Length: 99
Image 1 (tube, rainbow, N blue to C red):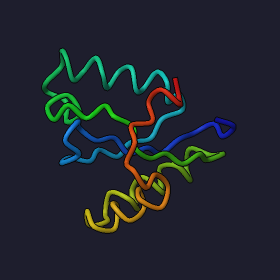
Image 2: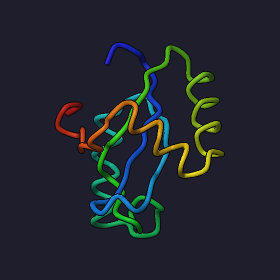
Image 3: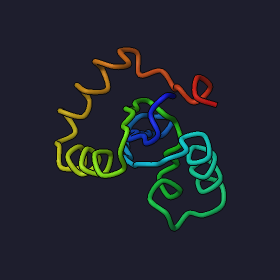
Image 4: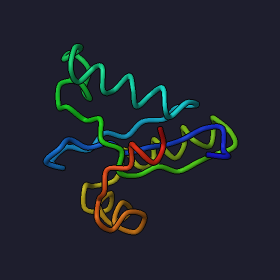
C-alpha cells in the first residue's frame, strides 16, 4: 500500500458484524485483531471475532484518515454494505492480499 494511513473494515466469518478502524500499519493491525479474537475477548473485534479484512482505503495524512473513519462509523449498515460491495463485490476476505 502506497499511502501511509489506512481506514479498514473487518467482519466476522459469518459477515454479521462490521468493525471500522484506522492504522498506519495494516499488516500489524490485522495480526493484532486476529490475536484479540483468540485471546482478548474484551475488545470489540475480539468479542465478535472480527479479523477478516473486506475493505480498505489509503490516505496520506492521519487527520484525513481519522475524518474518514468517523464518517464511515456514522453510516447505517446498508450504506457500509454498498461501499464494501463497490470495492469487493464478493466480500472476499482480503487478509492474504495485504500480508
